[in-house]
Length: 222
Image 1 (cartoon, rainbow, N blue to C red):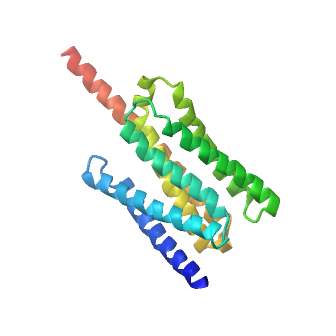
Image 2 (cartoon, one colour):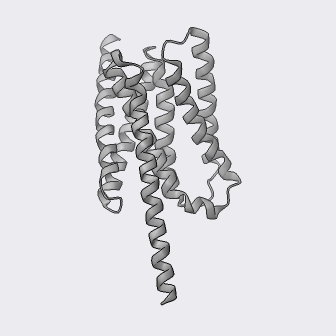
Image 3 (tube, rainbow, N blue to C red):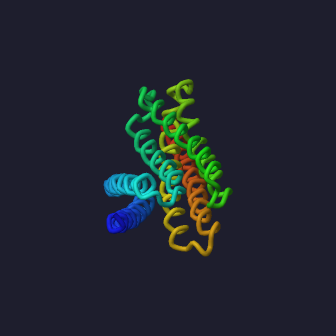
């Protein structure tokens, strides 16, 4: 059993490293380049491996329960970030409301569980992670009443936020595990960097949108 656990850890680490590399490359390359989509797909598939091995570690080998909340955040953000591009501003289907409810219920159970057995990880990290998870799932549920025109305008912003958030969550888990002596800083610094990247991306997207509007206005005037 211990050998299987070690094999699961190795697969988890390798998948996590590849996910980090693929995610970083997807962020760096030009978004109009086909490689952006390819790296995004690699990131998604490695996230699946990370989630699977993380859940096996928790429920089969009873190790590192904190992985559950990181798995929920990174996995859901990655799924939802890809899903929003496929919907391209269209109203979500029933599955897009069912999944966030399941994820939220899982997070609530996790809070109950850690309060029952005792809190071993930094409360700041756990509650901020769950807070971020509830923020994105609540937004997705509110899409039921958000006009389609608004959803279309926010597609790129939402995609950027969710994918970068998924990447920073994986980075937090990875760096926090590799450098446990620097906790909680090794856990939340990747999230701080990720949030900074999200703000920068939003500014770039906003500037591009403003530039396109000006060009369109000038063409209409001419």
